[in-house]
Image 1 (cartoon, helix red, strand yellow):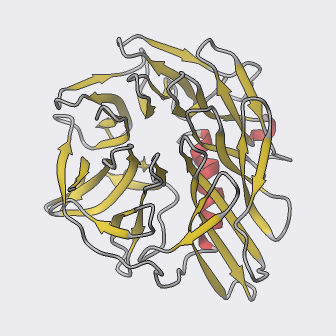
Image 2: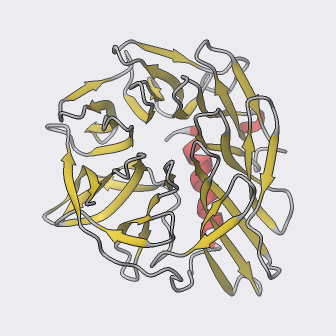
Image 3: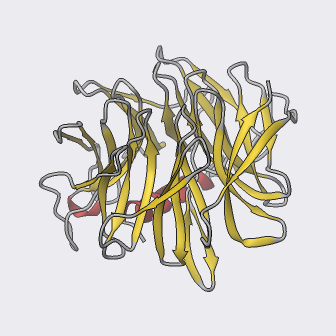
Length: 378
């Protein structure tokens, strides 16, 4: 298991417990028609799209075995190209930009991730932040790449706590951390076209479990939490995604009366710092889980994603613990969705045309995840 994901699972799982009970959705939910296309690497044990661009190029990873994964790229014509970093047992693309450049991480030794960029011509370079020392070797876990080739991600900080980095196209690194020890990691979740990095860190304030941040490449940093009208025992603000105009999507949780009363939901933060809160029909799925295949667990990533039109996608669970995708438009209208015959839907990315990528399970085969593209009907 990857160093960051272990820490992030533990941190976010703890925080998300505080927002396990959600209020009734204040925006109405309707079902809208859309077209669905499957994304599946032939022979794979599971296919997991992670990101798509406006040219309809999709990238992600697929399982060769329960413990071996390689990357894939599907173009607009549906042609799939598979790839891996040389010598790796796990290659996991996380993000693709407008030029078709892909970033993600790979492992040659389980639990020791390193960063990579795959250029549109297929050439792959690898990297780690300088001065990054950790038992098992230097490590890095990129999460996003923008149109200028800037990569943002995470790496182990001394005493195991994670920190963030931004890497320019020419290989210049900027590192930052708000950690005050191994129990207070800094986690990068996204990056936009102007190079603004978004994420969250565990706060030392006993009433604030997690605070979100924006970091510009010029070094200017903004911290923020969802403003609430009442005082709670604990409050959590997790920023997940940022668009080119600086709108941030994320989720929040609160806990009052010694955590006997819990609530939470999603939020959109404008560049001016104005928050709009929203609720979906069930708890937002905001942390990775592990799925079991032949007794071996592997990660299934979850995330909220916001596009340039401020349309947000993500996933939630209903009262029966079934998982569904949702899309929230800029006017606040929320639509639930599942691919035909689909179950356990996970939405991971949305492009500026409103096309959503993700994965699901057919009702007749809950063992093999299938990727999908959801194309909205005009």
